[in-house]
Length: 447
Image (cartoon, rainbow, N blue to C red):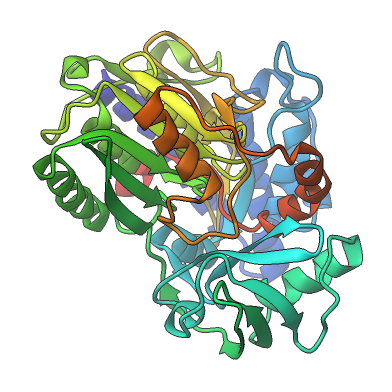
């Protein structure tokens, strides 16, 4: 079924590629090429957008600044039964250079994530090992006390903008950190190109005589072949150690390639799920009868779990949510943390001149037809992100809650901080906005 669907959909999209290339070849001036890229974005969306039946008959794509502005404007037509307003927050366009860097896991910044732990408490949420921050020894849980000499660090709109610019968009910066041992350190960083590391930690814990595997997986992007080899090594280690429970930490994983989601799911699904339906991709009404695709499990590795724990936050999106949803019909799935982002849809990269455009093109459902979680996957235990602890610290809120369930059969009671989390959430949403969120079907680029 997959091969037939691929041939048909790639035939249609190949025709669109040809039209786009032909249009671009007819114009040599930059403005003309840019306008035709905008036209191509509209053309692709008319054909492949999941909600294309809602699109207007006329749309002036050339009135927008660039193809990305076109895609953002078209999101408004994504109405879905049971939801108020547009549900599409993700259709976008990027230059081919931008997308090549994003998709291959190449970044050119300081290499650290940031979130507020409280209104005046900005923490390092994660560090890329090969980045300038990683090479400087900065670690998750370190607290910022000064940013380029400015000690005013809070969640006001003006300060959020300043902080984001200083840490995420600058070439150099000097920061003072307060470390867990109550010492301060001053570090100057210079942005540099580095390769992102999807696996930030893997550990095995002994809990009540049971071996518990813990995997912090931060992205489904990067080299697919390299990550497949890495999965094989990781899960050989877990199975050799006799792991009987797994905690997969996806709290900052915004998604990526569906192919890597499929690979990880095949290692996590119990043996009884082999050959069962993993997921179904459903296209718009114009193409659903011939393009809808079913992917089945092909069990890998010797790990045979009956339950699994996922750590999630609002930053857990798309391919990460697809993984969770795909496993639910086959095992006891527990979510710890916060509701996930809510992106049950995906897209293809479609060439438009010097751009790729990404109109949401399919929704994903599991074996039982469950999907449409636009409000996010809800946690079994609502727990705040323990930003004051490093990865793997068994006292970190989310990890501690999952380990407590494994040892006792119930989640630990973490002191409530609902009101505090609500106050800092708008600022954290802005600080996390630059992270890619998507489920990308890469098959098109391989044709």
